[in-house]
Image (cartoon, rainbow, N blue to C red; front, side, top):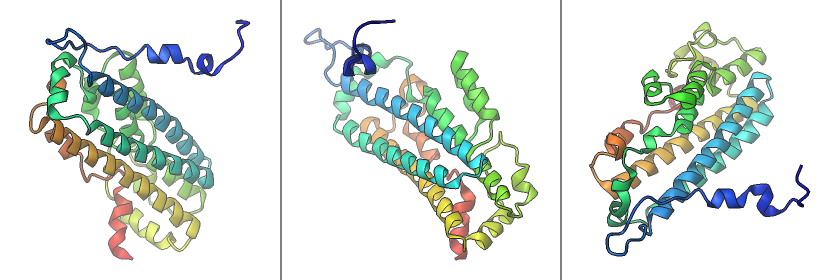
Amino acid sequence: MSTEPLTYSSYLRIDDLLSLQTRRSTDPRTGEAEHDELLFIVIHQVYELWFKQLLHELDYVVAAMFTNNLATARLHMKRVLKILKTLVGQVDILETMTPAEFASFREFLDSASGFQSAQFRELEFVLGMKDRVQLDWFSGHERERLERRFGEATLWDAFIAAMVSHGMDVPVSATERDVTQTIVEDPALQALILREYHDEAFAAVCETLTDLDEGLQEWRYRHVMMVRRTIGTKHGTGGSDGAAYLQTTLFRPAFPDLWAIRTEF
């Protein structure tokens, strides 16, 4: 065991952290790395750190739901919402980079692409947006993590379990749902949710879930617009479809039943 006193730097491993921003580009005029590549690396590393925290929080929320601790679940969903707002704010920083500045180092990214973020795919799986095809994009330990997430109950399934624990007559279509499938609208479940909305605590959880869903959609929209602003209609790095693919993810809610009931009040 080290006899050195614990410091801010050693606790947070600052030296290790600051050594991870390795630029690959070279400015042909100066022979130095392109200035704006550092911003690109830092932003995306910070995204991955926030994705790690989001998964940590959502796993806690799922566990709380399954133990019928809705107050704790809602509290930590609110934290998730704050983090999502922070992710949206980071897009503002990326948008200070012009298309020309991004183009100055884009070729050095080679086949690397944001589509390869295993943690973001994990987030989608936790929230019930499951696509088996996405597993084919990964291998090794990332594939193993995604396989596990793919087979696990989602936040929505945990919410359904909490409804059952509260004595609600939840339809079998919801309690026996295949957790490996993307969540689809369930009219029978919608009718039950509407009947129970008089319960303020239950309604508050539903509204927080809706907030979370909206927060994710807001981040997706800002991300799409940032990509369009930066590369237009070009293909993304790594051969991805860029903004064209990202646009297909817009306005696809994670919890469709909570949006469908809005017209019934």
